[in-house]
Image (cartoon, rainbow, N blue to C red):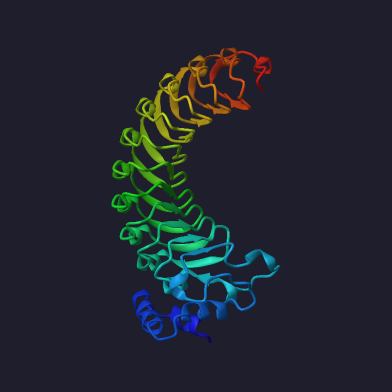
Length: 313
């Protein structure tokens, strides 16, 4: 049994104290040495001094150069707590595991991308990482209430789609720097009125969540490129979207929205429209001026007209 397996049986705080004791020794590359020993069959491109490791990403370790990656070669993220100056972790789509509680020790951390990995833990443990700007934990096993993110005033991105997080989006209204809000397929709740002051938003993905509210509250968000509220209880008239000139994609499928499809003709940058199973009406030919439109779905609506006559498709 190696040191990694021994440490894994200990509580997080105890592991941390052991590692800190070891790394305060005169040997300033023990953290790097520990990782290299753990991953000795892989190419590890990081500095020799622990204090010089500020980024750990997929360029750091050649995950994809080996056809077989054994269980013993999985990285537990608590090993990264060796690197006090770490600012960025980008290990999406890799065999990374562990509790995100360990990341709370990395107070210089600004960027976390662990998309589609095996990490778990409660997002409450990130609320002391005050320098965080980007959190991407889509398709992981993380849990917790999004209210704990309200203290992270520098956040630009919250991406936790297909996770077990919950909470009311009310607590995100103070995050004025947000540009990406992706909490689709989660248990989040709340009225979308609380998003109306987040003027930097480019992407809202709250599909298949429990949010409600009137889409009229989105009309002031002029930087929006993508909106996805499909399979939610949002309502309102799609005419409120016509001032959002930067929109590329809208998806309100299986919602309570209504209105005339012709009100979208001012959205000259739009390329995808999904309004299946809604209360929209009108004639599809009113959209013939949308030259960038590549996909439109209007099944089970009251929209009339022949889609084949739309020259833009």
